[in-house]
Length: 179
Image 1 (cartoon, rainbow, N blue to C red):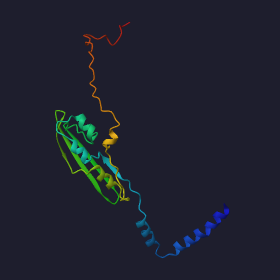
Image 2: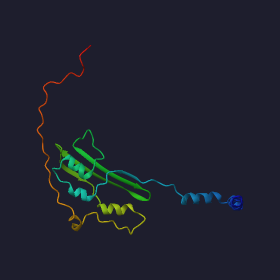
Image 3: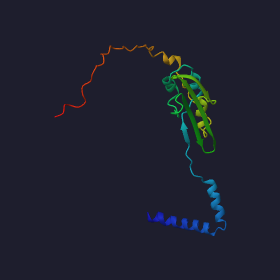
């Protein structure tokens, strides 16, 4: 171990002498600061909605059906109870900020209409995420008919509504008798 430390000492001294003897040390430090930059975190906010999901939206869908299709809305405003906003933004270093918005309007808990920015397909969005590897092949996200043949046809089960007993007319007191 001492031999390893003693072999590094001359190297460190030579490096310190070279840097301290350099008249353009300030220039060198500026050049190093230009090359070495801090890591910036990618900021992803909101709900990504693909164009395939938007195509499935139909007037007359219930709130539950819209939530099942698009997910929980980013904004469900208390002052605008008949409106759900799905907003999405992605900020990355060296890439323009992606920002998209979809607004769904309801009347009496049924979807009336929606307004949307142009949405990318899921494959386009996945391809836009990978800025390093351009040869990425996005897998097909659909099942082939041959693979679906192994599954049984879904059977529609209607829930039986059992006859409920009538509600009591009066309830017992919450507190026992005073002692």
